[in-house]
Image 1 (cartoon, helix red, strand yellow):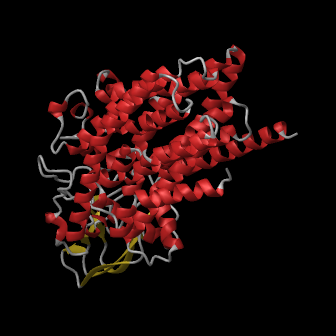
Image 2 (tube, rainbow, N blue to C red):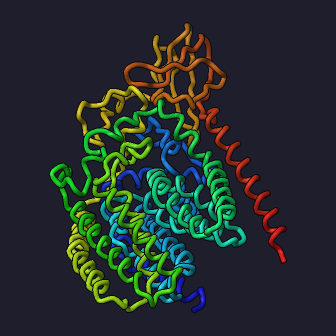
Image 3 (cartoon, one colour):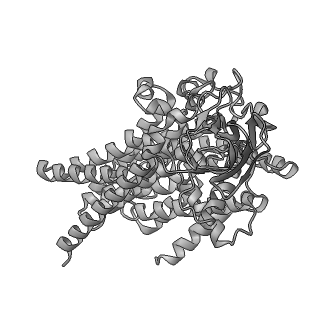
Length: 549
């Protein structure tokens, strides 16, 4: 089977699976308002010559937000490139649907590349890629949650496993594939990267090392994987370092308040599930179906007719799926209290690994299955999955109806408000409490001078004109973050309690410019990423020279 035909079939499948969004635009979902807000501003700055937009000047009613100091940029780079390629003639809602189409197609292509070395045949690899694209949690991310960043992580996950396998097999570019894909994973979605790093990645590395049966070879393999992973984190430092070290700029505590804690979402504690529970019912049905399918694969893998390698691969991936389902269910609650893991908010984020492992396991056994019990279990899995898929289909229909009757309103989220900004006690995730700053002028001066005005110049600059007979205090309609600098330079201070930028200007006629500068953590992140990339290129070049015939 050539490469063009599978690629075309996967593209057709992606179009069919995302047809509602392609027809009606980005459907209303949990995070669709934020996707619209962020994609529009990110793409505008990208087209304007800023390759990595970190600050969104239009957010919070023009008060600015440092969103992409903290939020992963990979999916929004894809959307920005689509914006450039289409000359920005497509409305943001439809452009996001097109960008999601490309990400879904990329996930299918990546899964097929992975399965070509695991599946029993090229046909099985293609079917596995289609199943991965159509997997319920994968589509739930798009239609229900609007989890655009997490949706992008599905395209990276198979490449991480592929990199490990290539290193284990001694194939050229194995370290480069692992390093680059592992760098892309947190830049796509940090919670997914954390969960993959705590489950699938170490388990697969240990499994492949164990298969060597030779301590020295296994040790070399472990070292190569570890160095590749370290270089991958280094390449991602341009995002990771600011995101992890600048948390005191913003209000991240809202990310783990109210319903955003892991122990409210365990499958074994439905009495704690926040309402409405339709999404949780879909996830629960999928979990039971995947568990049945994984057990069926393990039974099928015991058949003598299977090749030894295929039996081991199928058993490993089925076991990994079951272990992850046990974690999602909450049967091992201490796992969710591990450092960083406790910050992922929802245990069912691990379903991306479950779907990847289950599809891989199903592709590692010969079809039709030679075991009657295994066949019964797989059929039972399909039966259990049907109600969940039916519920999800009904939910998508409802979202189509809502989206056709009302426009999605762009919005922000309050975790990117400046630290200390007064929030409403017990307010919802979307209650920003911007009323106190909504009607403020661009610049307010005390005492009032002859001239006191401010105007925007570009994405990251504000021009301030003053003409005063005495020193005056200037308060700007910009949220205070340490990235701001005044030119000519004067000390910037933060007002209380509204956390606005302020400075004390001397008398006379003056023109100032408030502009964003790269903070130290940002510059260090770029330096680490550049160094890691250079080291990876040198390592890859040396390996290519050694392995060249």
